Length: 282
Image (cartoon, rainbow, N blue to C red; front, side, top):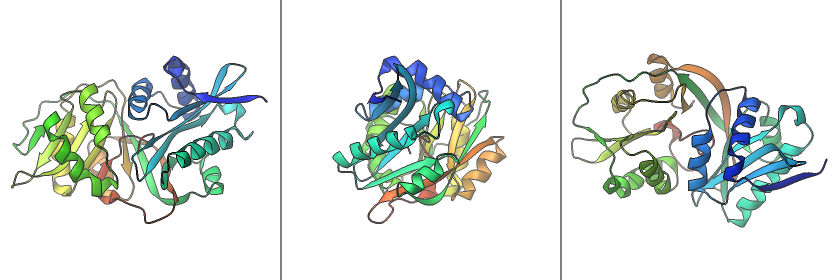
């Protein structure tokens, strides 16, 4: 087969969305994710094409000290023929050119053996939950406030040791694309100790240094309108988060392995991450 790996462009989005849903046996509208990811990393998304037809995708978002690989998929009819390995080797070579020392991803059961062969080590699980959400009216405490552009510096500083890298570009992009869909939580001294962003059909990133305050951020998110079903990707190591979303009626869709490849200590405190941005963005 004459497989060509090229840039994934905006013109590919409809095909890519269909392919991802086919490969993952889902019905999530990932067009919004593709738009977000391209804003976050315009040069980091690639397609595998066969006779002009899109048959695979992969991409990565670099946060400087760490990058996260996502949307790694191959058409089900063509899996097991080395195309996934070609895509992964392509993105890893690209990340090496970006001088990123550590790479993470969330592996499906099918993808796990390939990632192991490529040197990725399993760290913990990432659990995808879904729920049909209808907005509810909740009186929120004064500790919960809408995120404004003026909060982004403090927000990035708070988040850096928890995520393990600087995600300011994520916060800025989400705030620009979806104003009034981000909430922060402040402690008694007026310092940020948690936050949550709600995308069109996702909740995340969602971080809380004090687990007791995580629920009120989720309640804030449930006051918003969404395109259902709504997805939230929870680190399995944070059992408080797992129990919280299950208690609010979210149902487990699938479980992936959170994996890493590279030198040095794994950064961050996943115990304080209640939801990733997504499986594709970390």
